[in-house]
Amino acid sequence: MSERPRYYLTTSIAYANNRPGLHTLYEVIGADAMARWHRMGGDDTRFLTGTDEYSVNIATTAAERGLAPKAFVDEMVALFRTADAALGIAPDRFIRTTDPDHQRAVHEVIRRCYANGDLYPGTYEGWYCPNEGFRAVSDLIEDAAGFHCPNHPHVTLQWLSEQNWFFRLSKYQAPLERHFAEHPDWVEPEYRRNEMLGFIRGGLEDFSASRQNATWGIPFPILPDGSSALRSDDTWDPAAGTVYVWFDALINYITGAGFPDDPAAFEQWWPADLHVIGKDINRLHTVMWPAMLMSAGIALPRKVWVHGHLTLQGEKMSKSRGYFLDPMDMVKSLGTDGTRYVALREVPFDRDADVTWDSFVRRYNADLANDYGNLLNRTLTMTGRYLDGARPEPTADGRLAAAWPAALTAYESAFGACLLHDALGALWEFVGAANRAVDAEQPWVLAKAAKAGDAAADTALRGVLGDLLEACRLIAFAAAPFMPTAAAEAAHQLGLEYAYGADGNGGPPLRDLLAWGAAPVGGKVGTPSPLFPRLETESVEP
Image (cartoon, rainbow, N blue to C red; front, top):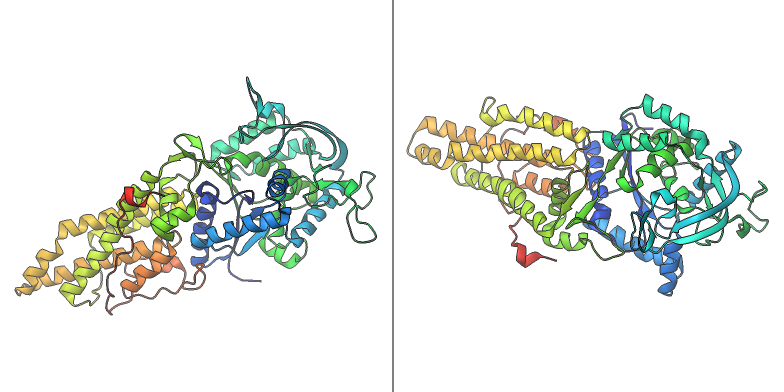
């Protein structure tokens, strides 16, 4: 067991029914930046993401394509893993709900909940959304055409009546209210917490934990009479049905921590420090999931962060309707780091945001090509031209030395609060300060005077360029969790070591490198090369 502080964070697992869109991977990009921040900070970090692969809808789509469900989800998962790699996402585990250890974890949770008296057989009759599951009438939208799922308004609902196992959620109303009261920051942002408190106080109803007629799913391990559904030939009795997709999917977080196969790993990694989820599944993660954990005698996660939706022209992105931005197209045009930056800078991590391709390109050009890319390029060019590439020391009392502590404090505070867009905003305020310093100090004027023999100008030139090089270094390393490849390349151009691995592990504690003046003394800078070539909107639109 590591002696370093540990940090375990997860994303929701993506529904493997179609190729991934930016709106699906947005939270994974954000969680990857958080994981890198903790790894580079010296924490023993575990980052989990993956795919949710069981549902009636997936089985139907696979059949329409003439594929077995497992063959279909294998194809979809390959697309997700390719997109993750293209976006520089480096999980410690990519979990699939079809993984064998996940089935064992689901069965163990079900057995514990049953032993605690919280699972009982009953009859479900009501609406079912093939994309999401059972929905209460109070949760549906009704118009002249009938009832619709609020999250999938274009998917036809089914009216079902079947024998299911039910989870006794109603039993956990008081314990959930107490947990919310005793841990006021465990669901954030605060307004998302208040939404769930209101829902809990409205009264909780028991929910289905199994399906009777759905064959594509984890076998339910208990028969209605309470006996095991495992037959003598080691197959599962179909009379027991399958585990309801949401009950199964939520358990992935403890599977990924080692439950139940590796008790030592589970003790090390659970409870999760942070679940990152979208607002449409807030209720599942902050009402149903904690109740399931309470029933199974397992600690609750320490925090759930709820982000908003990405919309295009005011309408929620949807893979099934083909109304989304393809992350592979974005990487092709903006690069891996450019895509990561614009997604997390342009879209607030705590609320909905309407985006366009043009808005992403404008952000890329303004912040990366113009502001930081140009700052680094001209600083290196001037150092090479005026000082023959020799790297001077930064001053201790210059304008940038004075500005950096406040910028770093704002950056770290926002990062710690999961406000990734504000963290980048604080850092880019400092980028702006560095660019203004170039215009104010005019190194080219100082260089001309120094060349003419002005010793004071020579000293001033070295101080200005030392400060600018130090600013470029600090920006590169601070931005590394967001733009790891660009950070490594910037360090190389600055003539500095970048000791971190591809996933952010290794290297010294990042905080040590983010002190003004922490750069090694002496040496030479490398050859400048544009990190972020400027783009023309019309020529790169996917």
